[in-house]
Amino acid sequence: MPYIDTYYARTLADSRQRPILEGNVEADVSVIGGGLAGLTAALHLARSGKSVVVLEAQSIGWGASGRNGGFVAPGFATGLDHIARVAGRDQAHALYRLSLEGVSLVRETIETLAIPGTDPVPGIMSVLRHEGTAALQAKRDRIEREFGHRLEFMTREQVRAALVSAKYFQALRDPDAFHFHPLNYLCGIAAEIERLGGRIFEQSAATAVDLEGSVKTAATEQGKVAARDVLFAGGGYIGGLVPALARSFIPIATYVVLTETAPDRIREAIRTTDAVSDNRRAGDYYRCVESGARILWGGKITTRISDPRDLGERLRRAMVATFPQLDGLKVEAAWSGLMSYARHLMPQIGRLQPHVWTCTAFGGHGMNTTAIGGRIVAEAITGESDRIRLFEPFGLASTFGPLGRAAVQLAYWGMQAQDWWQERGAR
Image (cartoon, rainbow, N blue to C red; front, side, top):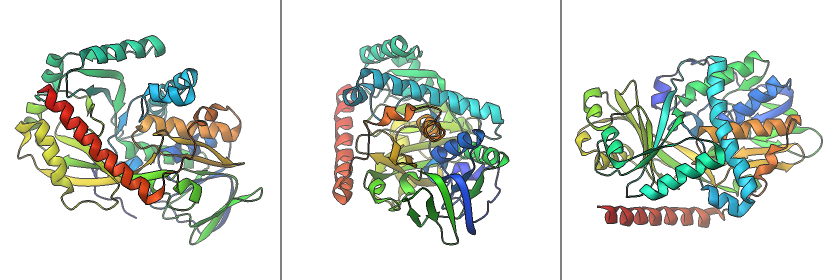
């Protein structure tokens, strides 16, 4: 299936099409899902000498992995203190170090494979929309003290020199984080998997699986894969293939727009090459692309699967509310993608049963966590490490189906109200 109209699809460096699975094939490992987690795992497995087959229902990176904000920064969708309350301080610290490793992994993969069109740009700013000097400085000091990772505190004046908006106060800047073209990155990984002998089949959705016995099978409309190990890495698009997995996360839609080309106008508002996200619980994130000629702006989440009719206009209004000087700047493309969120807001990385693995629920975590998740599952399959056990406290907690989705939507609206009240007090 062709990619939907996104900035990334428009600037795709490698447009090769891969075959549909026909007939029966065998492999050491079958990977269901050709997004970042699945492809990273498949690459590591292929490098380890395992025979790998990847089944992708659409095209490589067709889902959220290939149409997101392109942010690569450490951390998780939930805070370090919350992780520590569930898993303990030492385990929380080990998990945070994994997220730092994920940033390095993506960067090193770009460099090692010389993937064209990834266009990595250093620097991500996390900005406040209310006064918070003391809290940000304390966070900066803690991260450097406990992990040796340096963050830069930016004053209100420094922030507003880079982002000409009265909405912003202070920020923490991560100079080691970066933003890039995720779809080109995925296509580069896919090409390397194939060079190493791995097989990737597109337009080949897994329609049924048999996970009993020593050989696991995954059937498509026209074929079947038999393997000793199977990895489920379908994210928000996995559907009901494995009921226990389907019940354990909620597919959440997030939205992104691409503006028209207007470098001079954009420079009036955004005077940095850094990517930006704000501190609101459901905030905006954005970055300039094409050397500052356009803005890629994302935000808003909903449990509604279909796109709202006024999707582009909703995000355009959010952009203008932050930068009034951009009023009149047109939106050229708008799209959404489904992310999977677990109830505990951590990835679901682990073993469902002997030789059956999961690597999903990466909503809100960024590309670094998705990548390192794929690597540690591959390490578990090959027996290289047991780092996958770090995620054991965060298992397949039920989301309670439609009731859970309704609760998430209500919680989001509540967070928006809290954000509004907090910002109102900062005026």
